Length: 120
Length: 238
Image (tube, rainbow over all chains, first blue to last red; front, side, top):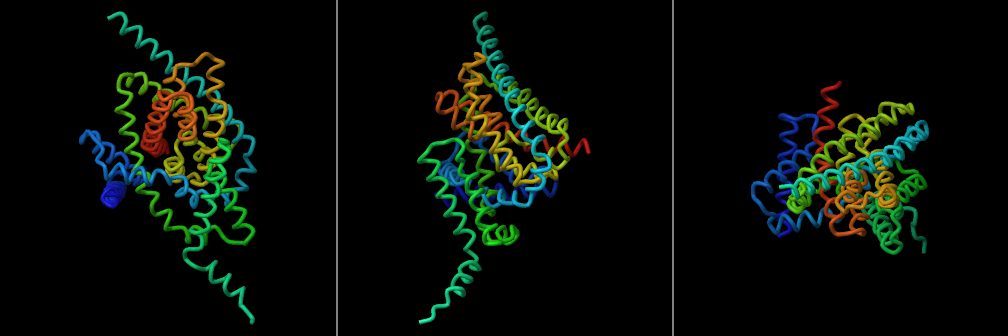
């Protein structure tokens, strides 16, 4: 079961890689694979058990799989130091402002939709 | 008896599985620390990074060697990224009633958050590489890392920015929104999911099931939209 689901994921990843080379050089292969799988699921209308099992197993360990590429930050200590305050400022201010904006926007749109439905 | 300890140690360190074993061990310790304390700041990825970097520096090991030695793990990252389509699909199905408010908030809010982050960093004088790396800061790490690298930024640095944004958003987001009377579960969920991705989603789930569902959807859609639109936009501009 697990193996069948994994085979599907690998197949979609490889299809993504092919399309990356053929048509979309700027979009990473795994992302194209993700979009392809999403379209496939929309058309199919459900997630089959093997695929669900394989996806859940892999996603459980996603942070582990990200550790090796993330260690590459070793090479960027100087870059961080050079722009430390710019990075900190940008991260914190944009976080606060955009969170408030997003929450406000969503709440406003939902309330408006509820009001419009009430009128009908 | 004269045991050759040095030779044994060298053999272990040079074994093709040494770095995989080291990474697995450190990661499990980090997960245990997080599960025991439940402190948002002890994200297993972040703690593993800190510990492993210290170990590599102490043993005087180059990153290139470590990278070479952990290909076994890196290879599975592609299929795992593809697997993100499954939760995305399941979440889209769950929130169909308010699909339009959700989509509008995602597009407008996601774009706003991204532009604001880059604009501020630029205003504060950060160099181009940092700008390209900070752009996908609100996106789940596997996607942010791919996108940052694709645009000429740094994948590893993107992981750090993503983690910091997620931790800060999850630590203070709900409280901040509550002070400003933004208390609708869907609104809380969207804000947490779009800005603070997976870490924010975990926090939203603590608030309510509904907030969690919206956060999960927002996180997946924000990831996919950024992954597709950001490199295309950058390619068109330059």
